[in-house]
Image 1 (cartoon, rainbow, N blue to C red):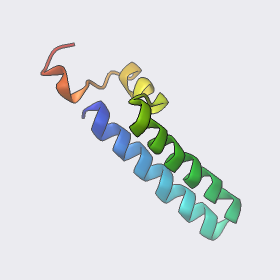
Image 2 (cartoon, helix red, strand yellow):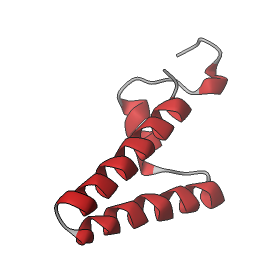
Image 3 (cartoon, one colour):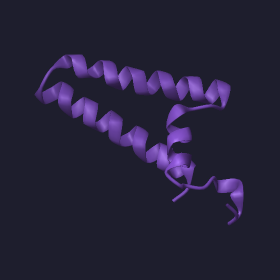
Image 4 (cartoon, one colour):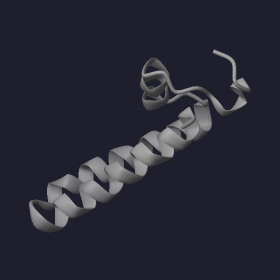
Length: 69
């Protein structure tokens, strides 16, 4: 799995989890949904995302790495 696909996976899971928690536990969990969306927006503008840095530390490679590293 690449970093880019991992990021989409993490964001999707976080959004679905926070919506489920908002429905079944407390509406305050929608703040997490907003945070994830804001982070994705910030990432699109700056090309930097903390989750991508963590995924790289976990050993996922970038899609443009072409098999190296």
